[in-house]
Length: 270
Ligand SMILES: [Fe+2]
Image 1 (cartoon, rainbow, N blue to C red):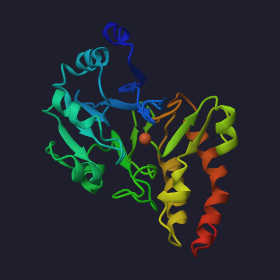
Image 2 (cartoon, protein in one colour):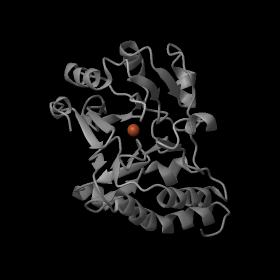
Image 3 (cartoon, protein in one colour):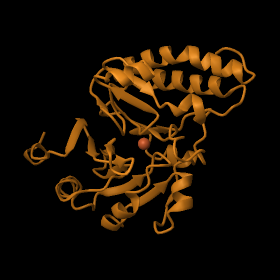
Image 4 (tube, rainbow, N blue to C red):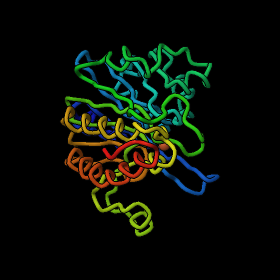
């Protein structure tokens, strides 16, 4: 780590070439801070890909500027979750020269940004391979999730090979030491990874094959990507080491309820 990077307190280097920045995000009229995040991936070219966006306070802005040569090295900014939108216009005002790629909902709702493309397009998903791989969960609604207030499961899942890090927003969640309420409500255990509660209630298409499609997508993700670390948007947020195994354990715990979902919607067990 360089001396310059060692001075950074807000940007956390998760692994070689991948930095995560956490920021407050308040819900319920400012009563609860659920937190949010964005990440910066350094390509072998030296340019950076910003993954999502947060509001930058002065300290974080100074660190981003130091990392990216005052933003000149930010090549692109990727929107990830359809409902993580509020920081994009302020970020664009600070760094207007990057290429911005939106989710379909970003592109529909934010007209002030000249979007370079949609992250739902295959060509965009593949544009940084093999350094970065990107996927969108199968079997769940990504384009126009409803109800908008709560159906926040689906989003871009980003794998950065060099740092062995998986970046996502709401679909997965890291639980370091869940409180009693969370343990009772979700079955979360210490150092575990779970799934956004809207997955089974709202996000999965109510069709015979949705749960099977999603389960197959998950098995491929765990098989194909050798990640050790995970950064999620909310709650504890970051797991360093062991994330792939923890996600597999989480999937094993989820499977019986996916079986139930599948059967309830006219399909067979997975
Ligand atoms: Fe979220």
